[in-house]
Length: 319
Figure 1 (cartoon, helix red, strand yellow):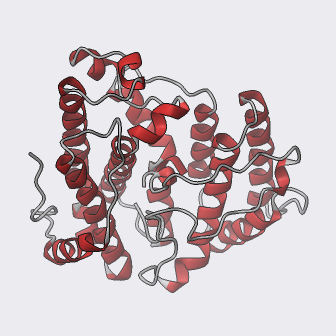
Figure 2 (cartoon, one colour):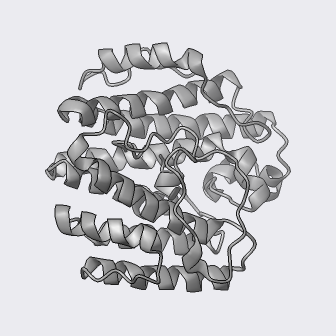
């Protein structure tokens, strides 16, 4: 879900669109980590020209908040306990910013702009807290027993971004929030199935254990990163699940007016296009990572133009 905050997802919802990159070392004074540049992450169009100008500074503030927290949870060589301690400090800094008193010694590059966004747009704090809960969970590299557990993670790692963006746009009806949650969870899931070859070597296991068992696979089998007929069938099923969820939420992009609606259309079509790229690889993503290229832009634009509430995924198909 995005207006310049696209997947994923994906900071885990925001993580939602990052590619592989050099891993920074977590310094002993974690408050010195600066927020990353807005073009640091692949396929993550932060505050693009489609973002309504009145929302842009708040969108960037939310992005820096989530990206910096994600780096505290996920990057460098620090141990899990140190990461959780850093995230605890980060949460206290969020509390200070929410109270209008950002700590000048605690990530001021993040929390001074965020405090202004909270005050100026009456941003709710609960979604920001949910994101931090997900980042804390990341430090343990958990496994997920079933799809319900994985969706619960998406509820905290991805869905808050969509709800914050809708808040900035003044949209808060129940249908829009439910569709936003579906889009954001789908973005997160699509990133997982796109990034299996990247996540598995880092000990990140997002495939639900119940799904793996149904295809006769164990986590050790997946960790070996050898594509097989069983793993391909597993990934095909998981991609279809993500596509169904995206279709469920995609009509939101047709109802949200103006620039935001058009950006949402492109976000939806971009991630559906990733699923098609996975399909073209015959779901061999244990060993390779599909990416979009310049040639994907024309069909994405064409499909975005043709989207309708009753047909939100024109031209999309998986084998």
